[in-house]
Image 1: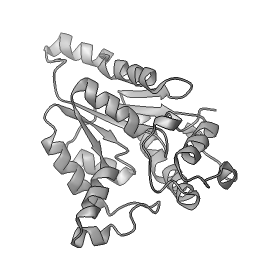
Image 2 (image 1 turned 90 degrees about the vertical axis):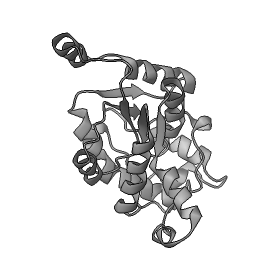
Image 3 (image 1 turned 90 degrees about the horizontal axis):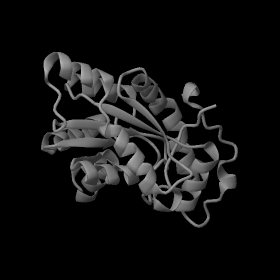
Length: 231
């Protein structure tokens, strides 16, 4: 069966919420809500699946970037028929994967190479919460494994898209199907979706390695992580 996650253990972003109970909540929520998003995009042109373990992060990142730069057959046909293909046009990408899959790590490689913006909803929310005020009060449960209010997420993400001059990579957004519909209503087109594929054993190793010293693998052994077709 094909696994669901990805990244490179010591090089993934550190998170304060990599704790046993919260990790279990995050994985369960990912299986239930984000799995259908991945399957939705899998059926569309521009879906790319990358095996993202067993190698150096930079090498895996280069493999992802090569795929993002590759012209699809449909793009070639559009160029031949309409003469509209321009390699310098605004590009929009979505890096998808489960908790601990290295989305933020690889997003940084991508944004530097392609000179586009890294739109990381989680970081935008954490910065907003740090400001204090009324919006921050609505984010009091941030970091406990659940979802932030969608209206706040959309405002932050759409504002970031408006400021992205050359393009962007979404890191972990959209997280559920309502957000996919929100993007489509806003006419924000995603050119390519990269799904980071990693084994169950590896994702557990990464989540425990990057969390607290007392985050032991035994805390997660009862979890059944889904294959692509189970999400």
